Length: 136
Ligand SMILES: [Zn+2]
Image 1 (cartoon, rainbow, N blue to C red):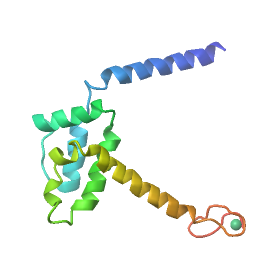
Image 2 (image 1 turned 60 degrees about the vertical axis):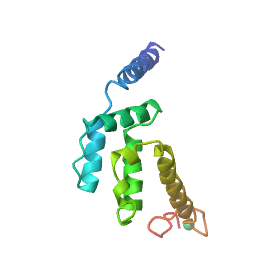
Image 3 (image 1 turned 30 degrees about the vertical axis):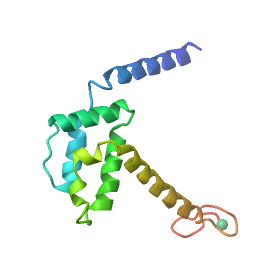
């Protein structure tokens, strides 16, 4: 089927483009803007230390969504914590603990998911919608 082959070749080409531009095209601004919006700060995406940390994490294989997740989870963790609040900065967030921060977020999500799993209808086992069974 020539059409199908054409389609997958295009996909591969697109993937190549993504891989080639990966480290030349790191969205420093998007990440720092996200952090600044969240914290009300004015960190600069052109800061050399910040750029090198973000680049290092991208080389580890992380993406923009991972950065936003780490910012979100540590924001919730630290914003009301007078002792740790000062660590809500690029140097700490994007440093060598990035991986454990990110997994902290994944762990919290798993907890949410498993608590949702108990939301099943006792009669038919369907997932409840807003506490009501859609099938009964
Ligand atoms: Zn039911």
